[in-house]
Structures are given as structure tokens and as C-alpha cells.
Length: 63
Image: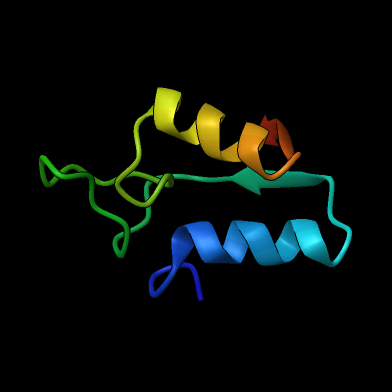
């Protein structure tokens, strides 16, 4: 689901009651626009913060 609609997946998680998510990187299937691997599916840290805020989610941990 994340690879097809990253933001929509975050929205769905929020709607069904999740409050926290956890990211991990690198993932081979989520390259940044510069081709480097990232667990943020092409988003930079500022974009991720905005998406998390938009859907009332936090990411208190990562691995």
C-alpha cells in the first residue's frame, strides 16, 4: 500500500485509530528523487513532519 499511495496509507492508518508509526531505512523500494534509498518513500524529513502532522501521527522511534 505504501508504494502505491504513501500519503493515503498514512491517512488510512490515522482514520482507523493509529497514533504512532515507525519508519526504517533503507528500503530498496522507496528511493528518494535523487535515487538514494530512503524509508520515507521519496519524502525528506520536512515533508514527513508535515504529513505526520496533517494526519495526527507521530513517529517516536525508528530502526
